[in-house]
Image (cartoon, rainbow, N blue to C red; front, side, top):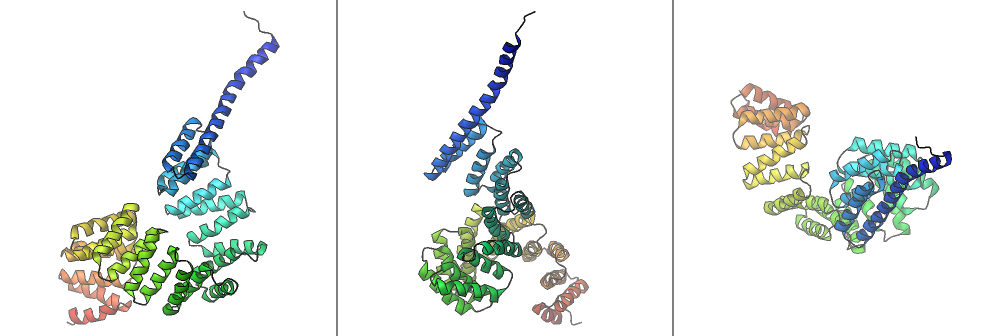
Amino acid sequence: MLHIPAAAGLVVFLTCTFTPVQAQIDRRLEAIQLIQQGDMALRLGNSEQAYFHYTNAIQLDQSFADPYVKRASLLQRTGRYNEAVVDMDKAMQLNPMSEYIHDRRAKLRILVSDYKGAEDDIRKAQALAPYNDVLRKERVDEWLDLGRPDMALQELDTLLAAHPKDTLFLLKKGFAQLRMDRFPEAMVIADSVLRSSPRSVYALHLKGLVLLEQGEYFAASLVFDAAVEQAPHLALAWYNRGVAKRALGLFDDALFDMDMAVALGQDRHRFRFNRALVRKELGDLEGALEDYDHLLKEDPGSVEALYNRSFTLKHLGDHGGAMLDAEAAIESTPNDPQVWTLKGDLHMMFAEYPEAIEHYSRAITLSPDASKHHYDRGLAFLMSYQLLQGCTDLERSMKLGFPKAEEALGYFCSF
């Protein structure tokens, strides 16, 4: 039997142990270098090359969370949200105690409408780093995106206690108050910022939005005139003025402003959607359809765009296309009564009254006190010679306050 001295045996053991550890260290260092190359490619505007480097880093060291986070951020920037979530989930598995990964995944989950998951990540990041002001600032925007201005205000009050002269925090507090319908408080903040900084575009936006919410559309349009003058390169300035012009019924002016907002390219999805609404109001159904087509190319799952394109196709006479969009909208949001009503309307156009009744009934189940749903189903019953059910629905619609129901009752049910 071969005898190995104890000292020699220790050397062999350490060598055998050291070799895989050193190999792992070498892989990690190479992966870090690849990440740095990916970051450099991004700074030079080469997203494809950056993606290549991050992917190689992942393949080289699959136990390293950082390249997954980097690639997820890149995928998010290019609109590939679901793929980004997969990468971020993997990063979280590898480093579950990272408050920063929780924070980044929260933002992604908001983009894919996983609001419960986003809130869970926000709270976990907060528990892991309760006094981190950088993450607190991020949480302000995340809570606002989640429709929780009350939580955003809590964060902002803490930040303002430490930084009472920070104008950005103050304005965000104003926007949070606006979201909570605290219009006087929001206006006080807007005016206080404008007194010290009369050229503040975001203070002008805040004041204009408060005026819009209060129904003071002309005054709002004047405020947004000043915002456009101060920042003609900022799409939001044109967009907000377009909203004010539309509220005033100045659709041609509104369309011009929406065109400018879309051309400037910031937040193009929202601007294009609202331009489509203005085009539809002006009777330019082909133009509205063009905008909806663009929106659905960028985001095929957008229920609002599907709904509105279906409505537009219906009025353009493309009943088949309208029906396909309505069905896609129902598949995406089966608990939205509006999409069931839309498909009911399409069946009514084809004189498919039993199918229309079925869809209106589903809308009523989801929203029992919606007066228009009862009115629509009442007409469908009447068209299929079911007078008792039709008149019962019209009476229910009238009691719920739908203005056309009383007239329809007098016309169809005066027997």
